[in-house]
Image 1 (cartoon, helix red, strand yellow):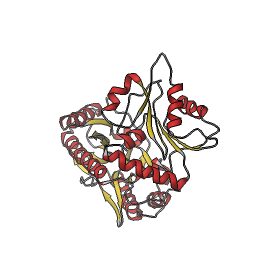
Image 2 (cartoon, rainbow, N blue to C red):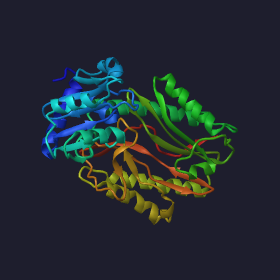
Image 3 (spheres, rainbow, N blue to C red):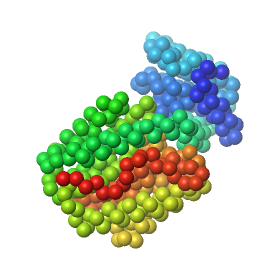
Image 4 (tube, one colour):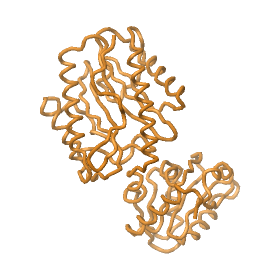
Amino acid sequence: MTAFPRTATRLANLRARMAETGTDLVALGPSSHMAWLSGVHPHGDERPVMLLVSQDHAGFLMPALNADAARRDTDLPFCTWRDDDGPEAALDALLAECNATGRGLSVVLDETMRADFALRLVDAMDAPKRRFTEDTVGLLRAAKDTEEYEAIKAAHLLNDSAVAAAFAALKEGMTEREVVALIQDHYKANGASLVFCSVCFGASAAFPHHTPGDTPLTPDTAVLIDTGCRLDGYPSDMTRCGFFGTPSEDYTKVFNVVEDAVQAALHAAKPGVAARDIDKAARDVIAAAGYGESFLHRTGHGLGIDVHEPPYIAANSDAVLAVGNVFSIEPGIYLSGRFGVRLEEIVILREGGPEIFSEMPRDMRRCG
């Protein structure tokens, strides 16, 4: 039993879920899954690192040169190996400690693990039946606890102030990259780091994943800012749109349609609802307004340790949403050569519906 309370709780929950799903072994690589379960986030390179969990044992396959650093974050046992020996004997020992040497065991593999790590494990076992983490670690990660909620909330409040400062600082001649730098400096000054930032002027916003460049801000230009920071291990993600000058009738119309789509998706988001139905709620609003072909992506994605993680709010998703799920609602309309509008909120699902993390209004940001 570990003396790290969060790890102990999550291990107990995982083992209960393993029992429910008939899982004999869970194998995690140096990934966000490993960090979530154990607090350990070792350097990932070609040296195999794994956390194996069974009902009998939980322990790490750990390169000896990483062991001291990793020991600060866990008291779970290590099977260490040196470069001049290789990992084979250590992996065999760890499998034996996990009582995972039988034939045809049910093994959950970390889908983000390097293929050579996963194949090494599969080859060391006797005809295992493998699947990925969707119904074990992934399912548990999707339900955020109070500590995670508070971390995500804090990151979003910081994001609010960064985006507000960016819109307030806009002036003619500024480039997209200069606005990114301003946002990054705001994060750094408040103890956070930049995860991503897309600042889009005018027609640049018609590309959902635009890379900011040297485009200067000119009068009567649409502005889209999609940005996120990482604070105390958890990220934020938000998109706000505005206009530098006087917005055109077309821009105002599109903005209002996107806002209506956000409202429809928020209204549809309830425990027990399929993710695809939330996507449909937003998509139907945009299609009814005549812009269906200009909504180019899913309505949302989950957020936790990773900025993008399950559940995905998409037309082809069978995921059923549950209390504690955290995900984005971010419909958009993209008009090539003209502008794009996307409004994004990250929400946590409560019994009565979604709670929005950001406290920054979604109304059109008027500047200039």
